[in-house]
Amino acid sequence: PRVKYSMYLQEETYDNLLEMYRACYNECSKEIVLTKTYISYDVALLENKGIVAGYNEYQLGSTIDFQKMDISVEDFDQTDVFQWLVNHCYEYGFILRYPADKVQVTGHEYSPTTFRYVGKDIAFKLHEQNLALEEYKVDKE
Image 1 (cartoon, rainbow, N blue to C red):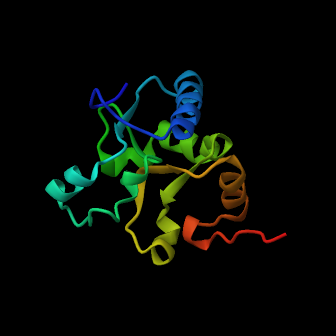
Image 2: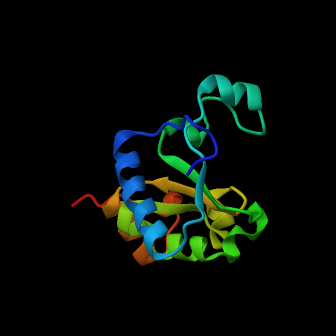
Image 3: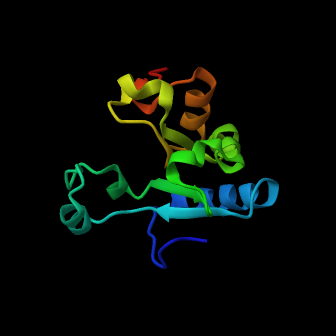
């Protein structure tokens, strides 16, 4: 389920999201909802909610927001859906984009609903080392 009919993502992101969504739906909750994906440059300009068009992470087509039906955004991190996503998202190549303990590193307020596809290898490394995307360093070997 999704809030809007049309939501766009990069193909690789979509394929892995679909796999993750199905697993969460089957193992955890039938109430998981996709609320936000790709935002076009024009929409970013129109919304102008502190987001600079052209610098909006949602314009990449790899950032998504989740929610649980009938739960406020503020309470999402208290849900079984959030716990499942945090514990399993890396298996599908996703990370919690703005963790509570990484506000100083990301420069962005905590957002329990925002996840980003970075690929399975990078997601696994970030998860294992408890790193935010900004802390990731590419191995040169």
